[in-house]
Length: 214
Image (tube, rainbow, N blue to C red):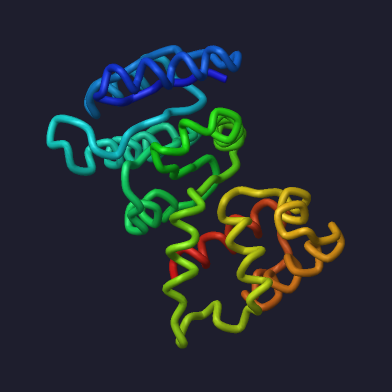
């Protein structure tokens, strides 16, 4: 997997690069600002971009803007965004056109080495990952007129873990449930959200999008 890392903090960028290379992943480029990131992607055509949301030149959401431009210009490039704070709006903007090959993690997750590398590989292979804290915030603001209000509490738990990019087996282990039980919950979620028959992965993405757009 070929990766470009964009982070204006030289120390943090170097740390992320070393973690990736120690895990056997290839870092083909590094960038210290959003404009340089776009140039590096244009030149290297990586499989995945890891980018901080707040980068120069404006140090607001320049990294996210660059990530959205990359997804538009090079749709085959996966994007994993790192943020210092929980911001649901950023997560929704990132997956507005589809959750495939996208991830949103808090920078604090980088210290969980195994979890971070797993997230990198998952996003790079076309999956999606949302930080558990972002998911928890979204679950916490459930409203009475929410289109997902018809889901049971257990189904919401399953959907939240789906939003984190978990497989059925991983969900079963997390919730201490049988695999078949999780499968039944997932089918029920698809049915209640009126997601018509389609490849399993595609329907999971649609369910996650419904979760984000509440």
